[in-house]
Length: 232
Image 1 (cartoon, rainbow, N blue to C red):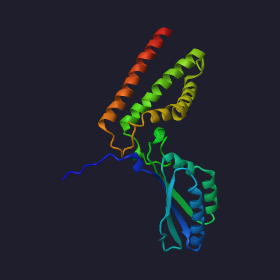
Image 2: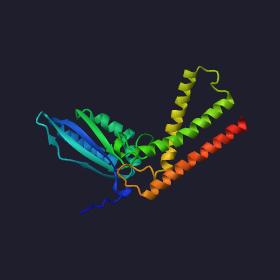
Image 3: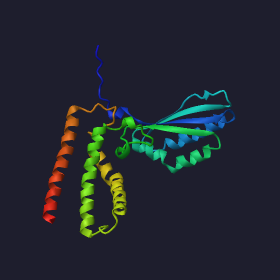
Image 4: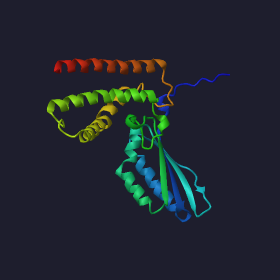
C-alpha cells in the first residue's frame, strides 16, 4: 500500500534550541533554580512558545545531564533570544553551576547565504537543493561582478594595481556585497522556490522559480551586452 507524503505547512515547524548541560550532583538544585531564571526571562521574548526541562540523566560518575528545549515561533525570534545580552549574562552566571553545555538549534530555514530564516549551526541537509543554490548564487554573483567591474573601470579604481592585489580587494568587496546585501534579498524574493530540503515544493513552484531565474539571467546578459556596445 502506497504512503502519501504531504507537503508540510511551515506553521508546523517551530524553531527550537536543544541544550545539554553537565551538572555536578551537588549542584542539581542550584541548576534547577538557575534554569527557572532562564525560563522567566525567555518567556518575555517575542515569539516564545514554551520551555521544557527533561528529567535528568544520571551518568554514575558524579554528574548528571539535563536537556532543555526552548521553542520559538520563527527562526528570527529564536536568534533574537540566542544572541541577546540577557541570555549571555545568564549563561555567564550559570558557568559557576554546570561544568559544560552545548546546544543545537533546529530552524525552518536555509543555509549559508540562505540563512535569513536559519538559526546558528543549522543542519546542511535543511538547505535548498544544490542546483537551486547554484542558480541563486549565479543570479547574485553575475550582476554584482558586472556592475562592480563597470564602476571601477569608469572611476579608474585599481586599474594600475598588480593583478593579485586588485583581485584580492575585488573578491573582498564582492563577497561582502553578496553576503550582506545581495543574497539575503534573493533569498527573500525566491523564498517560495528556495525551500528547505524537507519541504516538498510543488512542480509549479519549482518550474516558476527556475524560469524566473533563467529569464532574469538572460535579460541581464542582453542588458550588459548592450551597455558594453554603447561604451565601446
